[in-house]
Image 1 (cartoon, rainbow, N blue to C red):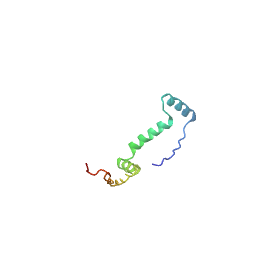
Image 2: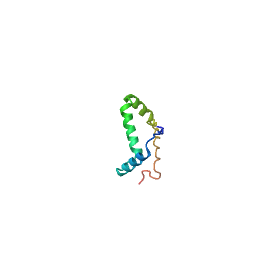
Image 3: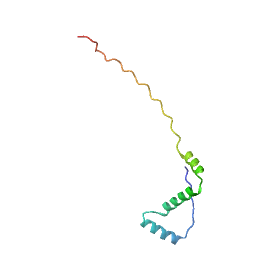
Image 4: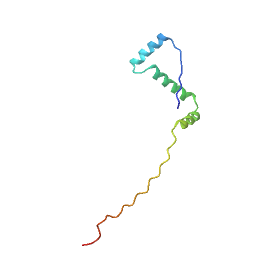
Length: 83
């Protein structure tokens, strides 16, 4: 799916403190916002709508190519049943 950009205003000093604290946890503001938006989407958007969107986002199945017919091997030359 195509990605959209969201702009949010937040107090700069608080954002700096939040980034500092999340970095110590091995996370980031970006990662936590994406996680929270995902949870909000799951709780808010009805199942049928999510299923529809998921089906549109899934790649279409690729048609199977037919296998070529096996080639017949010619009989080995020089091997006639003589003594």
